[in-house]
Length: 138
Image (tube, rainbow, N blue to C red; front, side):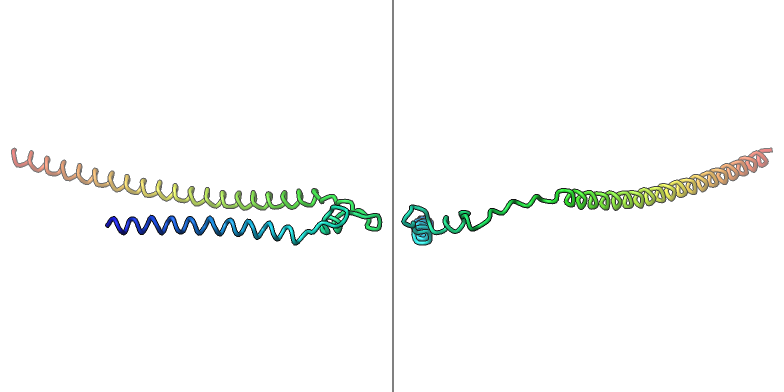
């Protein structure tokens, strides 16, 4: 059992060492890519910097102002539609709840009518049996 644990530790250590080596190699490769992809020109700037820097022949483009009004309008329209959907859903839910309540109330009234009817029948039978017993006693 101990041998298995040691082997497991060794594997973990080997895996960690391999990961560390891979990270170091990736870092070295990235440094080399940076050195080779942007060599410095004679004036001390990289070729990439010269291409992106505006020159006299290239006109500087003014940033285009974003159209916030259309964004606001679309957001407002989305909001209105979601509110309408919510109100519609809420209305149907309220109607469903109202119908359920009415159904429960109908069922309660029906049960009470049946209970009253049963009590009246019991009282009628009880009075008949008491009347019959009094007649037998006389």
